[in-house]
Every structure is written in C-alpha cells, then in structure tokens.
Image (tube, rainbow, N blue to C red; front, side, top):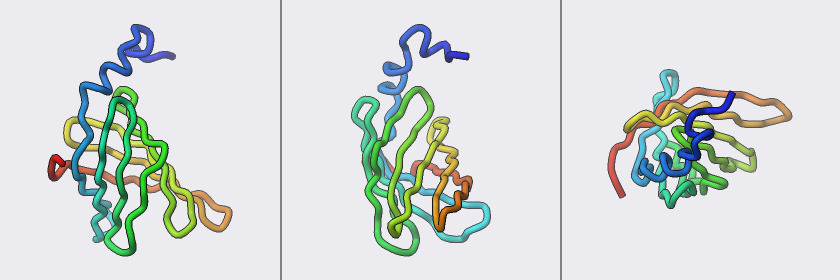
Length: 117
C-alpha cells in the first residue's frame, strides 16, 4: 500500500519542510550511556556524526529523510550498523540493526533534539 504522500508526490516536499539539522541525544531504556547524534540536512540528504558515550565518533553514511522516515548507516569498530528512525516533532524513535560475528541484532533507541546547529 502506498502512502498518500507518495501518491500525490508530496514526500520530498514534506521532508524538506522538516529540519533535522541539530544535536540530538540518543538514549536507551536499558543502557545508562548517552549517544550524541549531530545531523545536517540538505533537502532529503542527511549527514552528520554518531558519538557514543565511549569511543570515537562515526560518520553517518547514506542518510536520507523521506516523509517522517530517516535512514542512515555507519560503521562502528568495523561493524556495519543500519538505523531507521520515525520522526515525530523533536523526537526520533529508532530501530538500529548491527551485524557482528555473522549475527544480526536490533535495538530500539529514542533521540530528542537538544540544540539547533
């Protein structure tokens, strides 16, 4: 089933009306650490960095916002990670899938905007 935004060609216009540029705080219900997500948006293209509480930052790759859905990938310690987030105001609900030792694991995280860049 196609989204009404896709049928009428509004998906790109809708994404451009939303501005993801800024600093976001990513938290887990289970882990005490906080990840800082810095995003820059240009049209549907999204770039930035993913900075966990421990370790260095990772560059966001293949970032894209279509409608309310943000997708991007990154690499942590040579392991690929894919993120899909649903944007609602100043909150993004993420499903983050990583692959390690031939296994796949998905975790859920919530990001809230803490500052505009």
